[in-house]
Length: 407
Image (cartoon, rainbow, N blue to C red):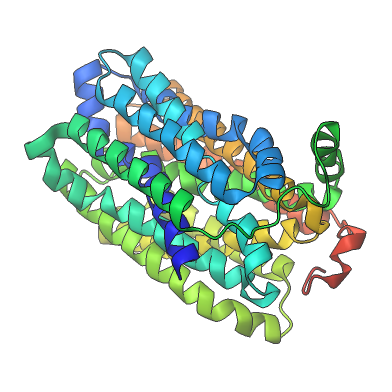
């Protein structure tokens, strides 16, 4: 429990800082006169830096272990919060956001690697689901609580508080975790550590699933962490307070869906369902719901957003399934390689969606129409990604023979 809670504290902050811009976006736009494209670029700085750190992170995890790597990185995230809190222009905001993204880059990858050595294989998917519950609690903390705190401390005060909490999480991971995790024993270091990425990135099995992660799963995280807020305000005509309340409900549903996933996964595995089957059916349902969101309004649209929160949880099965198909000494690099691809997709989709909205706006009569058109264009891209998953038949790596449900 101590191991889980220490890592969960760090991931709570990672997810909170990932999502907070969806709530404070109106204040940032007003104070710094940001366009939709600039707002998307600002928020995506987190994901760009996060993605850029994934390859060195994988090497660090496999060589130095999760405790030392994650506790050190969280201090950089705290520094990024200080820079963001004191920013006087868009450039310093961007740099602070990027430093935060780099600092929380190990928020999930560090515990997932440690869990492989400290917990039984049968517990891995459940632990992933429970970590995501902790992350979703972080997202919840940035909805109504942040909106309620804004009159008292402002958006800058929110980031000062985050800096303090990140330092405390770093101290907990450094001081309270056991020292017994294996690190760097099977693959000793130097160039060999980096060459391990060649085996990971040349795996067609990784890429078959990664296409869905890069496009569909990444798009959802981009919505949750930024564009859901502007969508509620611009398209569904909510006030900022109503949008924050809706985001709170949305993330609450997502949290309970992750809890349910931890209960469901062992049962569907016993029934013989493969990860490929779950992801294929789940993705088809996600796309159908997204089409509905793109054309509906009012209570129906809100209900569809909540349905989307439930359906997307199945994507968390992909990373563990694919990563555990590689040899044990490549664990950290396999997790971070997949994470790199997903977060590159988040960075791209968060920026490109804002650009599409601004571009389409030149040809339609209103901002809500531009948002809806951009949404449906993006769903078309997601359909291509699903087709790749369904029709590109690639066997898992030889080492995955011991991984259940890999067909």
